[in-house]
Figure 1: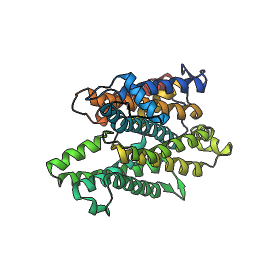
Figure 2 (figure 1 turned 60 degrees about the vertical axis):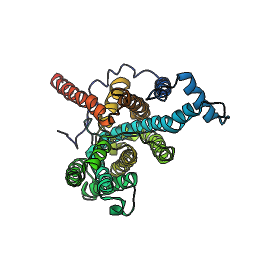
Figure 3 (figure 1 turned 60 degrees about the horizontal axis):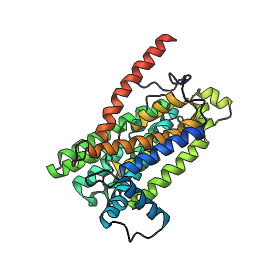
Figure 4 (figure 1 turned 120 degrees about the vertical axis):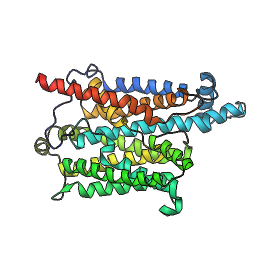
Length: 361
């Protein structure tokens, strides 16, 4: 069970983080290089394999603004039009969900929280499934992604209003409101699924489990602006997040406007999550898994955790997407199946680790 509203102790193992003394720039450089190499491999692997050298030439030619007339037409279309947007969307989605997880865990002062505690995913699912099963006319002509974002925004607004106590955002009420709103919207989504036909149901299930298969260049504009801008802004607020997780009284004593900061964190985590799941569907456990790995490896300082979580989240989801389209080729497996298969055992391990750490204190 989540426990909120108490002074949070540093995550177990954070004091002995093995890479804590390594400069931030060095850690970021290694993760960036790993991400670049993995992305290059990912854009070359699929139903039609493209050699890494050819993939590199195609990408650099497009990025450099050079002529593409001498490139293989089929390879150029596969790499640049289909796989490059997909890989970039996976990287942005992984980064956004990881950062949202870090922010939410700081907001409710609990390391076992993740973005879906807020009920945002359930809201997005209801909006998307409504379009898939009832048609765009049911939501004013909105497409699936737009309806998903609207659903996420509505859920966020409800949790925000219900999560306040005496005009202040309460971590405990945020969690309880998020759980209640999430269950209510899940019930609505279940009802819509019952009314759908078999063809619609397959599409619905695939969306609910998450995928970046239909990524397009035009989708990346909004997602990239939101993820990059908010990650940079939150990193600049790293000191205040560090103060917040020490407890409300200590943070106030350090000059932090706790209520205002909680509102900002709530809004940014909701915006990150809503923007990502509107285009990828329900990809779970990224916001829970990645922040823990980063804190265990690099320490609990949010000035390090936020940028490194973004990079590791990007690496993780690009790798998961590559696995999803190669594990059962030519069929594709939704991302949520793999992220849950990895995330659930990690959650159980974390629970056991915290229990053992508690007995040792």
